[in-house]
Amino acid sequence: MSRRASFDAPEILGLLPDAAVAKHLSRGMQSGQEYPPQITLRKASSTLNERDARWRSQPIRELLEEAMERFEDRRTDADGWLAPRLHATLRLTRAEAGDGRLWNHFSMLVAPDYVVWRHKGKEIAESSRFSGPHYTQCFSRLWWAAELFRDGRDYTPVTLACGVQDVLNTTLRLDIVDHRPTAQAFLRILDALMAAGTPRLGDHVNALSSAINSAGSTLVYDVLAPDSLPLVDELQDWIADAATAKAVPWDRLPVGPDDGCVPPASVDALLPLFEKLHTEAPVRRRIRAADNITVAQEVPGVPVPRTGVSLDKVLPPG
Image (cartoon, rainbow, N blue to C red; front, side, top):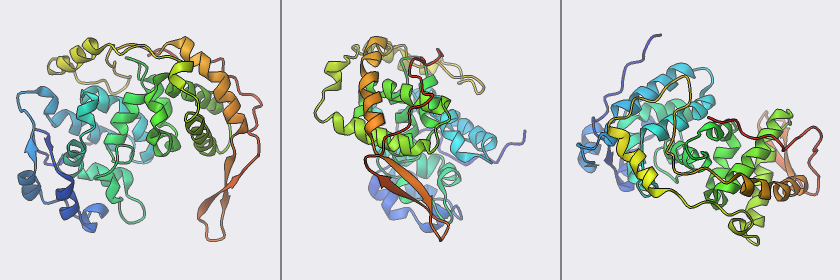
């Protein structure tokens, strides 16, 4: 397999302020016609500890180049492959992952080519893919999707979540997915809908996400379905092992931190409620406009067909 020329990324990751991105991001960069000004941006960045193996950029570049090779003709499919591998390679605490300056450094200095490759529309990749909220920025959204949808060390649910773009575009931005049983119960329904060949799947995802989020304002999910306490020491051990960990496998899922699985009983407790919310949620029907642009029309009060959908399935082990 031929390899594309590697981008000349800094050896060590760093932190790049939002202001530097706003100042130097141009339409030429967003279209892929030019690269960001490397020398200027490196001066504006603060470099992370070079003694910490986690901050080396080479393993990340290798992943991204492989993704661009594998998914050249189906670029949205790269998300499900890359998200768990990015998470398992870049071992972060949530506090570290919440620092947008790290993801700015990724997009402007480590892999601006990947941002354009993955998110360029007819003309450009939107600026929020370079520097934006955690659910929009090119790399941050994948790391957080893996973090929020994994079941302990099992990344299988992550591939399911990333297989439907509306999950990344809509569900990921909702606070409810911070509650692990809610995230897994949502995926159980999604898995059943996919198995049933449900048409307009993205419309169902958006409707269900909205319904669960609205219900969560009056129902306390963590009371209905308590989660287990996170195993902090195990997570820290996993992070500390980054220095000696082998490169993530490309043809099977990596293994995540062994910081505790979601209690199955809590997921089961939420399923009847989520089934009801899904049945009653209005679905946004996509129609083809005269100018060949797909638009969405919400049809309130229309129940969602349930024929052939079974929620008794469980996610396979990793």
